[in-house]
Length: 221
Image (cartoon, rainbow, N blue to C red):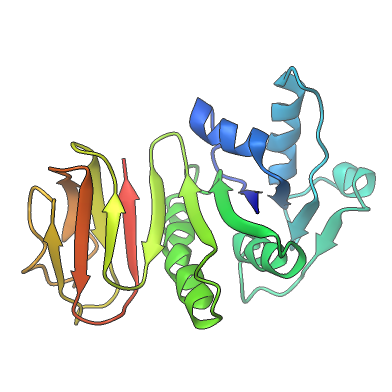
């Protein structure tokens, strides 16, 4: 199978792990003005330039010069019901059926509102993949500081002993029993974002048992 990298227009990664995911991606999709950051990255790469498979979005941040130069791969989607990250996610699903993992890079930083919104969308994507029977596709958001992904039901997560773990959910009716976390989440009421943040794994594997299927965002520092 194959991996896709979606590059958003936040802070472009500098650390080796996210850059490795970009270098080894089978498909690359840039969100609008993120093409500028990607081209700067290519100029610094010893392997030379690699053309993205697509540049997608409402094109509000893509310079006209680049829009013309790369017009053969620029896809203009004007609707404002979804952001450019979501447009890219759907494009990958529709056009690259071989992809079984999607890494979203450059989705955090610069603007806090964008960071919060982009992270929360991981829960929407996980729900959509589950409802469409495509749960085999793994999607995460990688930055220089963290790895984030969403789960929709009870699960076992290989996170590594000692790793900081934060859990978020918009569902205040959800109860999560946990094993392997320093501070158990059994009595947490998810009525605010901070309620299960800044925890720590006391074992290599963390087990989460949901009271019912729901949307949960996991962030590993």
